[in-house]
Image (tube, rainbow, N blue to C red):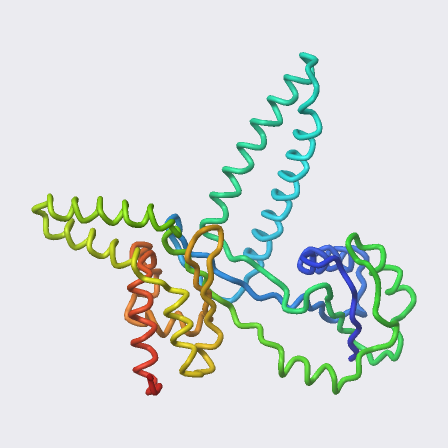
Length: 303
């Protein structure tokens, strides 16, 4: 067997892989044994998530990913066309502009719903796919070169020569393709907004006679006062290799944490395998508590 690298448009690795597979099947070409886009995924979790799927990528996941990509491309085209027509005042154009507006609204809503329960797929080797040939070729056969080059979004080849087997072995040994979970917590507020929201919650807590409602309000205040970015940064001081792979940041004004699926499973090992209740994943203070507990359970020396 032999391996060759193919350059593709960044972000289109999975799409090119699927198109090439379809062409190879149609032409009954059997010289190519495998195509690697080296996909990994991130399971996005927010307040609208009602299902968690932390299993390995399936063909359905790939199809869903490509479908969302096509919808996103259609939405971008509609928005561009809508923007280009804003200066027109002819009644025919106005009707078309209104139609575009409705289509944009519908597509945006559809994409939002689809993204609530999907795996965001990325390629580890951005801008490239790897082709594995069944036989040991020093150069990529000419007919395969032309066939691959004809696939949309294929931009070229770094070399017609194969990749040395030793380099391939080292690459597959070192490449990290672990899946991740991205948890989106509460929105970041300005100082004044924070003070006002906390004051209103405290007032609600003082007014209620319901213990459960009072506890919920107190937990909400705890979440507001939990700085997940600072907490994760403090944990990284332990130099634990797994914790170094946890990332905390602000994304679209939301406190966000990304962590390996293996760590997520260990943190929530006491939950059922059929998925976690979304309410348990919305709590940033609860997440930080579980992460500290995981550190202590793994005998990490805490400063």
